[in-house]
Image (cartoon, rainbow, N blue to C red):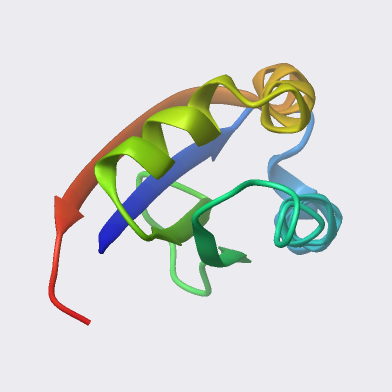
Length: 99
């Protein structure tokens, strides 16, 4: 199993609406379940404490190959394009784990 974690810093025009942005992105990313092979779980949430990042995505995959395929999947790329209009910074961390 692979866990893919992404943290986003919203751009200034979006930062006051982190919860709304998170809700919109959550529904878009959840729609990938059953569409992207090997994607087993996905969530997007806004943080409730001040910090360097505003939103977090956590996605679980069956394998490294499934996570790599997700990165190039057309439906993911559409969401990624939207995300890039909303953020000013991003960081990610991926790791393998036993289920």
